[in-house]
Image (cartoon, rainbow over all chains, first blue to last red; front, side, top):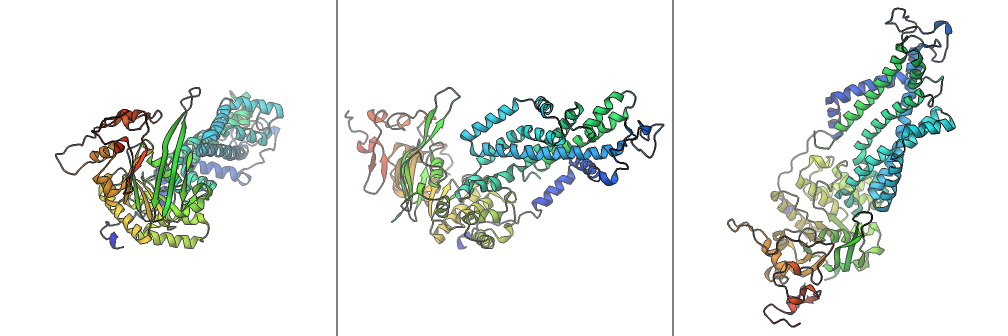
Length: 300
Length: 326
């Protein structure tokens, strides 16, 4: 240690841990906070639908068709959001419908995320021929219009919840792949990857422990955006009658069933429409906020 | 003296594509380099940007295979050695301590990594070794749980050095270890490296373009130009009697702290040749102030003098002033 004397005072690092810092930044971000609270409410309401919903969402009662919600003149407290054209309780259907939207958003995100992130990481890390091949696959996929392909496939093998999830999951990995590829390329060239290689670490270990944690922020942001877009696509497919099949209470399907009554019973289309808009808004706010919050280290 | 690391006629070429239909071209980043690193010495490799220093360093680390030629570590061909075997014996210290530490890992984890991947020690042993090494490079235990973002450049470079030394390698390859640091911190890091070299008996390959540092610490210097080693000599001999015109220009280009001397003129002009189309004959001839008639046709052979210095230059065989015999 003799030679180290006079090598300068070594200042203590700041006290805040990375986690505490992250938490503080999250609380300071208004958009993220609003989105997170809204999303939490929607998730809770949907998950607790079996206990919260006042009625069976499938129970029809033709004597109680088209009861308007309580803020209209003929509203009844038994059906706070009214009933649809088959006399089913609208509040219960909206709550149960949230489960379907969330299920689709989540599972499509997981399936497409695994495919896209895997391809993107491989292309960005290995480069060369592997990159060329994967870029070709990505370009091919980008040339396919998602809605059109989804419509064609559903028309051929008929729609169901599972089919919709699989189709969207197998189609929507492109953004994951593109973003992960370029993020990985950047990290790949950094010296800490070379240092891990020089330390003798195996390739899977380098990808999982050196590269992946450093591209995770981008991955999370893409995942939220993709979940929101999958929810919207499911609604669109269901609206066209090619997604989730009746009598399942999907929000897209509810909008579709309500369109015939749009001019006389506006709430039928407005309620599931607003629910959908709020959910997508919440997810996008969270994604946007995460992008800011997870941004470069040391920017605090 | 035993030879620890030896490069024999090592070449590394890259294929450069210029679009789909243009013909691919080869770039020889390192072209027929032969070097020997003796146990316990500090071999400095100097040369201007783009001359292939870093590519050579990556090959010596075993990160990049040589296109031709061989690199022998302790008498054994590196290609026949496993990744972990090489890692145990050769470790790097990189130039930029801001990109050489994973920002998502704690300092202790970063330092323990080379030991951890060997798979021979349990987590507690790795951690203890990491803490010990951190202490040794001047970082007390409270840094162990910090992240790189919380450290200064000099502290980060200490972490990088601790990581390189945690497995007690025989050879450390430093790729410009101080050029990204503040001047005030540079000497601290150099002193630390020299201390550790003394204590652990490490051999260094020291890549740099800071000639003052090289003169101060290196025992031997190899000068690279356009992928080739043009001169190699003991440090004192090289700085007193530079024989290759490029070495002379390089030494003339070093800035002095003396005010009023202005910025030195190398007499080389600005044009670094296109490495995709290297000049024929001696690679240095287009910029050489003393070139002879045959320099643009004949590749100069390597002349070895009695002190072990090597120069690849026609001038050595035919000092200037003597008549040119075709």
